[in-house]
Image 1: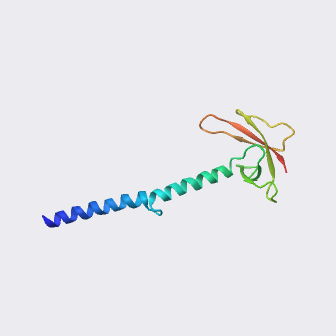
Image 2: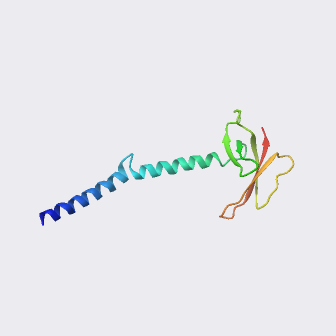
Image 3: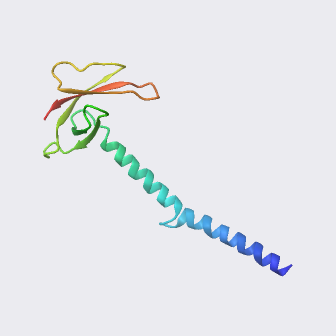
Length: 116
């Protein structure tokens, strides 16, 4: 009976410690998940240019991925000039490049860029 009680106490103690560590430790699971989500949000923000942002574009002829860069840097290739809402929008002749976006939530748009 005493052995069974010791085993039950050890199991609940270990489980309690795991829950405490996950929720309160700066290196626990919750902190790691929050840090990962924060890093992912920052990374997404670097690929979501706003009007006036300068970008470099990876794979411009394939699956283009714009990355926001400082306009004074040597990496800057284009400057974001317009966002055209709707599906299959074409940038006007005053723009040098355009990227069409389609997402599952129904908000399709085109970003238009001018060369820097």
